Length: 333
Ligand code: CP
Image (cartoon, rainbow, N blue to C red; front, side, top):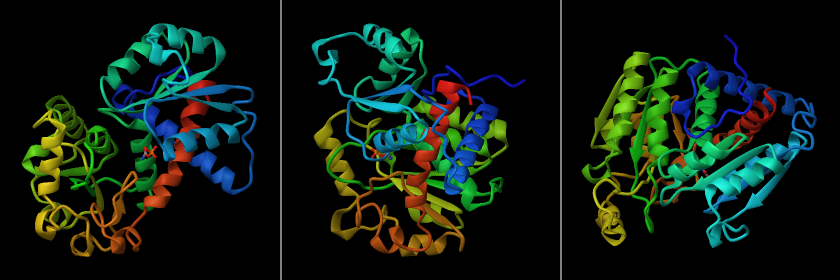
């Protein structure tokens, strides 16, 4: 039975059925194609407001929502804790009860601390749809753009193809697990086999791994974990590699950064996507990254600027996915 997506929160793809996710992807695809034909969509969210509450910085997420709602005829309102009374202790409940009276949608990025619990609390008191713009565990708007990109690149023919979700030794700070979690959870549901590759200190959360394996089992897809990026890339269709912190291994930030750096010692390339690894993958394989990436550290220039790379198409699809999310959850398109 067809049920409207109007008013539905998007906190993780796990909360949505496959049919609902496919419907959203179809809307994104239509909006993308019609925009290319010069068709305007500025009546869909006419005079509607989407609040964007960012606890951290963003290039893609903020600007895709902002440009997206402009194209749909509405307005995006940028908020930070400092620009509101949140920094003075205003609770999630009061914040969203008030914003619900002013606008029709709310996105939140809170990647550190209890971001997901904060979003669940907001959603509990909200009378408008709440979108997770990234928390410590999930990044649903990014993974939906990733699925859209993979479908486009492989003409919607995903079953039997294999995605590598690999760790890289990204420097300077502890990145969240949200992207790796979102990929291993969502990709099996769309028929992809998954190879997760990481050194021993970089395990994902056990409850996420259990859910990912269950998704794979239900979808009839393969799911494996290996400790070598090189082995994972052999025969792969998709190489998606980015850094995350040793969060399940240590809570000490300095120790975490030391462990990350140890995998780049003496010019070690084991956890860098380079030409050698892409040569091991299939000839028509694609290289993906949610961006921003560390050039020469996570991926070589040769790969990220080369023929396998789809990172800019992937970033563009954030726009179409954000528009579909707002159109479906705020207007019931
Ligand atoms: N991929 C992604 O979420 O990018 P931003 O951090 O720039 O939003």
